[in-house]
Amino acid sequence: LLRIKASNIKFRNIYLRGVIDKTTLIELSKINKNDNNEYDNILFNNFMNGKLMYSKYAITMEGSCYYNSFDNITFVNCGRILWLKPTKIALDTGAKESNVNRNYFTNFTANTGNKQGIYLEYGDTNKFINISFEGLSDWCIYIKDYTKEHNDWFYTEANSFTNVTFEGCNKEIHNEVSDTQFNNINYSVKSCEFEKTRSEERRVGKECRSRW
Image 1 (cartoon, rainbow, N blue to C red):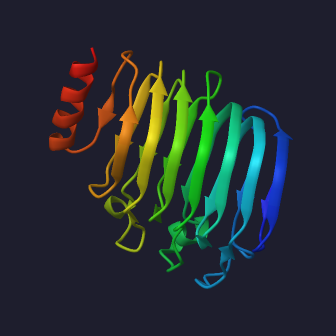
Image 2: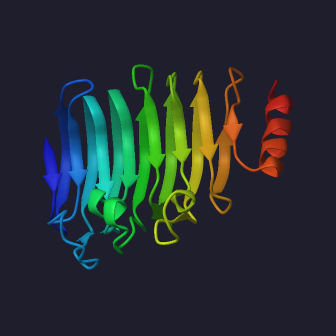
């Protein structure tokens, strides 16, 4: 519904409604997806206050997106609320492009009816603060290490999650990247499912058991 190929735009009180399993509501993407120009960037857009409803993907960001911010967004019946990814041409050709980084996502709420939360397969130093998940049927946070399938240019690193709450969700966190930072993560007693390194699994397991 809304494709952003520009910079320095402020959006306020956004209410978008699409079609379940078909629509992408907000897409930030390079001006020319077939161009390998790594400096074709999307910068300093600000989205504040809104509700995104009924979609396959609520928000997608493809390569070369810096310093954009989303604040106080509620998601209703979305297949995936947020997807950070490389462009298709970069994946197909291995072309060098700028990463999705230094973006801020604050005060997100995704309740029952949404399927998947944040899918992060390409990006670094992004910050996620005050995120609430309730009743999601798939992964709330899924962080992929693309270097396993492609090359070192497709990296995901140094992203941070602070004040994240999970309540009644089937799967909370899948993390393949060792330097992802998690601060003040609050689980309900339903599942406490967390996939990461062995040491992290043991630490979180102890936290879950102490809550039970």
